[in-house]
Image: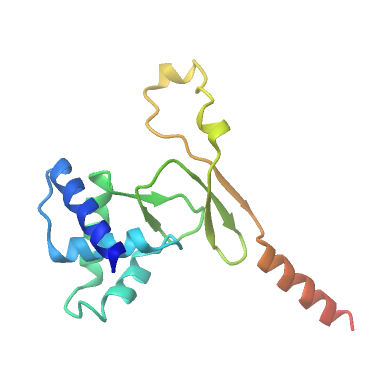
Length: 154
């Protein structure tokens, strides 16, 4: 229960800073996103929230996520897959994405974070965020694939 209160205080402060009206639905969407470790899609958030807020529509979830993103309270996670995924704004981190199960994991990389961008980039414009997305196959999927191959060779 403490986590819910922490998210509410964080959200109230962030809404005031962004000039946003704090609504019950925005609060619930943000709190669910902030609690999530799986970088949920709008559809996944909708499924999680409708038991608590049955009158909420999927369109409301999409519109709220866009508002939170524009206000700097949430961001899209670059997945290289068709489905859009989101996360609440957190300390700098990067993402590992399994190309088999599409699971997304966060990881810190302070060495990368501290590398200055090339000077040539300055002629392009201003870099607001540096992000690394590494794709591959997670241990769980590699193990499942190895087990499947083992069964097929019998």
